[in-house]
Image 1 (tube, rainbow, N blue to C red):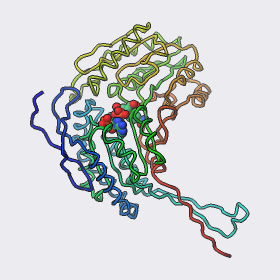
Image 2 (cartoon, rainbow, N blue to C red):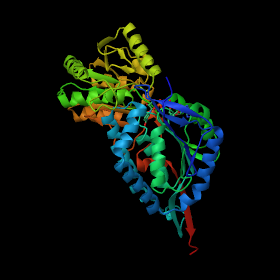
Image 3 (cartoon, rainbow, N blue to C red):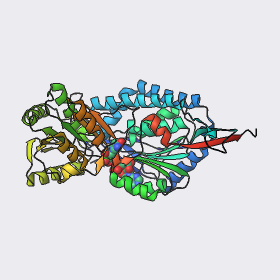
Amino acid sequence: MAIQHSNIEKLFINGEWIEAEQVSPLQSPYSGELLAEIPVATVKDVKNAIAAAEAARKKLRNMAAHERAAILERISAIFAERADEAAEIIAKESAKPITTAKGEVARTILTYKFAAEEAKRIYGETLPMDAAPGGENRFAYTIREPIGVIAAITPFNFPMNLVAHKVGPAIAAGNPVVLKPASQTPLSAIFLAKVAEEAGMPKGALNVVTGRGSVIGDALVTDDRVKMVTFTGSPAVGIGLRNKAGLKRVTLELGSNSAVIIDEGVTLTPTLISRCITGAFSNQGQVCISVQRVYVHVSQYDEFVSKFVEQTKQLTLGDPLDPNTDVSALISANDVDRAKRWIDDAVTSGALVAVGGEIIGNMLQPTVLLNVKNDVKISCQEVFAPVVIINKISSVEEAVALVNDSAYGLQAGIFTNNIHVAMDAAEDLEVGGVLINDIPTYRVDHMPYGGVKNSGFGREGLKYAIEEMTEMKLVIINRNK
Ligand code: NAP
């Protein structure tokens, strides 16, 4: 397409806006419209960003907690003032429907607010040294020290709030950051850099380098000055990166094929159905805890399918900037083709398409598949598209076994009227979080969040991320009495 007039963005390194040697066009996934020219960082730019972060380390480490908190409070306040602008950026660059994008901005405001509050609550403890012979007359305490330069690598699907989940706790704990956002969503990160600059972030405390992860990723992950890599994205990239990170601390927030179980006797209210619809199709299913599999007790199956399909048909497809849009374009044409191929493979192996399955432009219709075999890709891998499978189960035990028969384990949900069934499921499900009487697609930003198996390790949620981003130090005073 013809290059139209657009903004030429810059790298943010050491508090300066740096022109890149090369820029690359950023287009809307929905319309193909040119949104901006994005700097393509070189390895040298990344090294400069790490050097700037390293140079800022001491200043940040010595900054009082109330000062770090004040910067984060100001970031939160500026996001609140510029919320509409922020939501529009998300909607344009990622095709997230605007109402959902506004929800993400509201969460981002809270995430920085929580980070500001947690900055003032980084505690250690005192130890009863005399519990051991030889510990008499010694006074000991622990403190939590900032770990050092943090490389934050983020995905496209929550380009403001998942960045906030890394930058917020890092600054709260006194660590400088080099942020590498996803190539399709750099504008949200550049917007944050502008907000942070206005909020008084010290030079070098936050650096934003844009460019392809496959080209500049290694420079971030293998540099000795970087003490921690915090990554949210796909398992393939996360596992590769972990293998290169050596002894650096690494947290990985990866994907899943999350499931919800509907036990017998549960009343299938419009609210329950619409929660499941939200879980399956919000942001076109491009949510790491999207409902990809629904296991419904045989006694409720027909009623659930009919109600679910009916509500799915009511969803509006279209322009992400239209407030009436529920489902818009997937992040790339490749992802549309991949999801369609997986649907076709499932059908070839006996699945039924109850609704959807067709491509319209870069959009895939919200799709419901029935009777899907457990070993087809659409069931056992992460589809990251508006596709959900609904299968019959004859007991919760059977469903729990199916949920656990997965390479992933992020969150799972179960609707049941029986407290014992709920508590057994909470015990038996191999995931990082269990939602009772709710869908797995639930997160508020201060809760501990993360997975097991190929869904990663380490926890986010401000307090928990701060634990990952600090080192415990022990101090022992011999009172020589
Ligand atoms: P992705 O392709 O893995 O990309 C994530 C980030 O990694 C991007 O910034 C990407 O840069 C970068 N990257 C790619 N190759 C790299 C390399 N060799 N070295 C270093 N960095 C590299 O994931 P995505 O498609 O953006 O996001 C979707 C995935 O994220 C899904 O699997 C989803 O489940 C997961 N996710 C997990 C959570 C959670 O909290 N558990 C939350 C949201 C999303 P480029 O864009 O330049 O390639």
